[in-house]
Image (tube, rainbow, N blue to C red; front, side):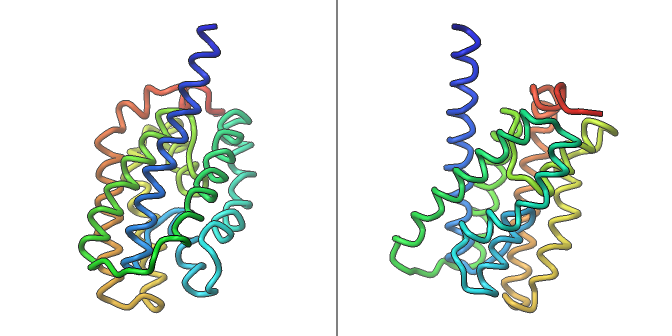
Length: 203
């Protein structure tokens, strides 16, 4: 009974984390900003190819599942797949929201903040959104690296690669969102390190 309650709480927390990340994606998309990780790659692809974010997210996540299986284990991989699928479904709601524009700095602060909080909650509960998340958590487990700093480094490269499609000003605001997201993850790195995920991760 206790184990069932524990698992149920984990599932609810993963769903809550996806809801928070969805809010961040909505703020970023209505500011026409990008961010890092698979979320940022999917946003950039959705802008370039004019496809729904949910479709882009599912497609770009496929290669990272192999890394997750071999480095983080099946439990983490299945939880991550559930999180990516849940986020894809939730972000479909954005298509029903009337089009509106948010200033870049507002989107960067709110979008980056929500992404940081949502991702941290996912990490605490043995899940992620794949891609850079998997790499950051594995490096934390194996070498004790700060997952926020790893996320910032890789995400900055991803964002800079999209400067051409979003422009310099929005590109700089996108960098700001990455700084905010990675700073929040770094703040909670102690709790992330002590969570079930790193203990179960494969060496």
